[in-house]
Figure 1 (cartoon, rainbow, N blue to C red):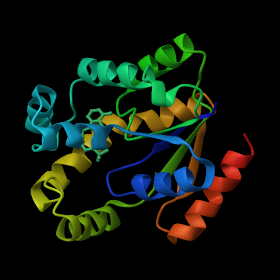
Figure 2 (cartoon, rainbow, N blue to C red):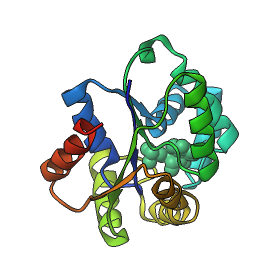
Figure 3 (tube, protein in one colour):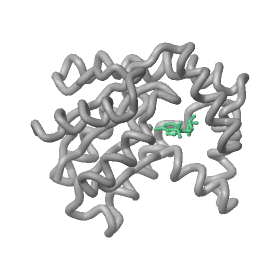
Length: 190
Ligand code: AMP
């Protein structure tokens, strides 16, 4: 049971590369953003709370996010499977708690794949995705806010995972296939 974190800014290609890994290795995909968007679409109470943060480009509070995650990890579908964490953790607190939550379940983070892309390219990709998919938070104002939140709250995790030896930087500006091959090499080393 491997546990892989795909890390990087909004628009770096986490979702695209996660899909490839699911096809190739059959990982269980935990995308916290998708879980929250699903709640919003179903109009649940959690969805209403999540929407109030997501629409402003802010992070959902750690406590809430950690509850959701622990719940997901205890679901039957996840039992015995390798997991890709996509969009989680996003704060140092979430990363610290993830260690504990995984340890309690006999797991650990095996590698953190960091897809590194500069802001200009991220903005270009997110605007394009917004036009193609209609995703509500892919609009210029919210994109700007999300990138600021990324740099302030999420990027410090790069140091956290570099210091514990788990961080593997990958140039996320390359072609999708080339990035996929680099990630596969990394995973096959585990
Ligand atoms: P994503 O699809 O990963 O880009 O996430 C979309 C939005 O969901 C983010 O901008 C946050 O508002 C929220 N979100 C997703 N994952 C997390 C997380 N781990 N912690 C806090 N908020 C999150």
